[in-house]
Amino acid sequence: MMTTQAIGNLDHPALAPYKTMKAQHDHHQQGIFVAEGEKIVRRLLETNFTVKSVLLPEKWLESFRPLIEPRPEMVEVFIAEKEVLERLIGFSMYQGVLAVGVIPAPARLEEILETAPKPRFFVAVDGLNNSENMGVLVRNCTAFGVQALIQGETSSSPYMRRAVRSSMGTIFRLPVVETVCLAHTLRALRDLGIHTVAAHPHTDKRYLSQARLDGDCCIVFGSEGYGLSPEVIASCDEAVAIPMANNVDSLNVGSASAVFCYEAARQRNRA
Image (cartoon, rainbow, N blue to C red; front, side):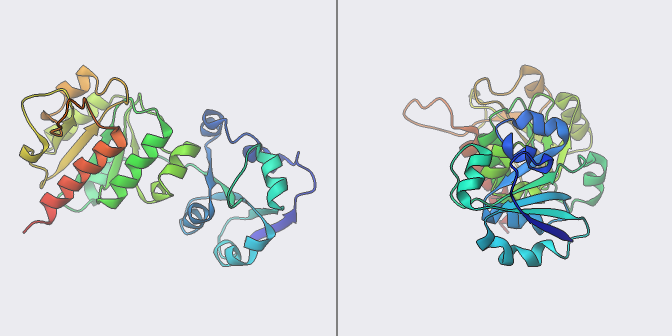
């Protein structure tokens, strides 16, 4: 279901999330997120996420109508020319297509463990607070078959606006488990026989090619500046590194997650 109206008043209450797009943390506290761009908004509308509103130029309306009209909730569709949209949000946009969605309830780890086919493949994050890096990591997870993202208590939400954008909407297909203590959760996974692997560049004991990732496993990635906390490392079965030459200290977590997840997928598909 949908209602359609041209924007006549930029102070309409339903437009508030678009006017405050840079206030990602405020949106998260309200339980909402903003999706930006034609592809990402389409991917949101193709899910069962609750969508509050869509904001777009009139030229996009008919192509989006088949995605919006069948939805069970009432979606407010606001129409304005690109110049008006940019005045509303405060910066330039290429396509001018946006939507406000409701952040879903966190997935329950117990349900994931019951329903995920074996071998299980999880990724956890510790202290990851850069939204762009979070979004790239989510995109890599989805590309290589990760079944759930375990969000440590010191990491930011993958539903921050920039994270959603960097993920290209793949966050809509990846269950997110929130923890109150990542180290405790990792120890619980170990007790269940799930191999926990710390992606830790400062180890000279094990390299990625030596790690067994073809069974049930969870790969843990750390923050951009400080890596994994000592407690989280101690809660893992092993710490492994990507071998690098030319005195490069480490890779960006987005790049590192692509390498690790590819290696896990490669090991699982070899036969």
